[in-house]
Length: 435
Image (cartoon, rainbow, N blue to C red; front, side, top):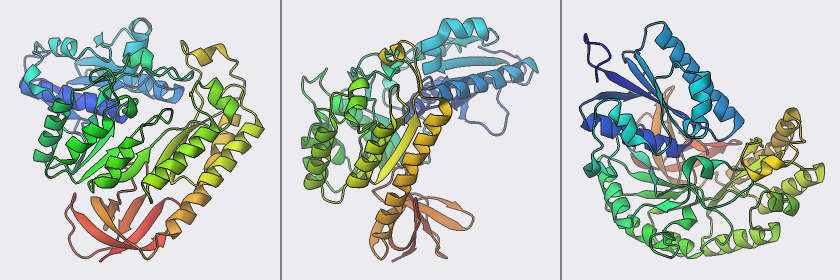
């Protein structure tokens, strides 16, 4: 399809939201390129004529950002600076009819599973032989790898199943092939992502099969780091940790969203776990993999949350001393079971509680970082900024965790691994020198 006869189409994909959306955009890019359509991601040159906005619809702030981005692209279209605006992703899946009414200037809206329909807009074919192929939007030394789609959990606050459907695992052979392809492109670290990692395999292999997948992926030559994101704590399959301990290229790192620590909140959130069970799980994880880095996410201001609940959460963190913590303020999402509850914590109070919890975690983070001073860590070089190299240890994921600042006159290629001795600790970063 040509929107203007004077030039060839060039598509710019704008990705909002989580890493799962990033993978979807990378797959779309590969399909467009295979159909000989020029495509870029987050184009700064502004020499494109078509835009696809891959939206997020998870919480209020994400929805607002998606709407603002769509409107800004529509404005460019009105001014004649671009020809077409398409909208895809979670917001479009969830609110398609509303969006078509409110922003009719968009040329077409697509849901989360409608990649072939997007391609039809360009008179392009969906190429099945490209399964697993992606045009990476990340630096070439790391990539996200989505091992399943959707979620079968019924957390009361979460709208993801409304936008992504039920849990569907990708076949193990396809994932191994995808990992091999990524390594051939120069990728050294893959971050396994899903809405729920520990459900992997239940649908197609009739058992939780993440341990087996990890074994097969760790056998892929050239794959130096494998990192696990988004593992649900309820009925956590401890055999994953046996593989983590045995295989050197599986990072001693686990992202395990807990959401809260007060039992009445966990029950209202339908998390299927108690604080006591979470404490037992953390102890078991640390026993199986000594020195493991545990990351979690929390929610502040859930309906009915009291000051006592916030204090209990703070004491839980001070006792457990988790390595990494992120916190969201509760977003009242329609069609979730929590939407029937009274959203009775004002927005300003939600923010105050979130900050209160993070202030407590900041102290913990600094203390844990100070314990690293004088020690040597294998570190991957991510980038160079202001004359300094920025890297990460196996205990840190991209963008959300600590960075290691390295002063070096020696040229350090991006994506290389180096040994770094930590010389200084900050709240959320480290400084070090080459060994």
